[in-house]
Length: 64
Image (cartoon, rainbow, N blue to C red; front, side, top):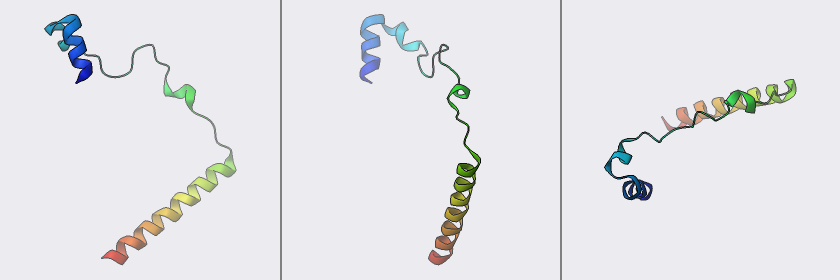
């Protein structure tokens, strides 16, 4: 709330009613940050996810 008190002292009560959360409109979209993975990396990641899902299911049944 430190930031809120700064706004209150600088702009008064009306400054607290403004919506300042979220990204600004000048931000670039996330599409520009996406990288294309090569096929082998994609296959490795899929295999790892499947392995972890199986391990998770095994541990859930072990605890039951």
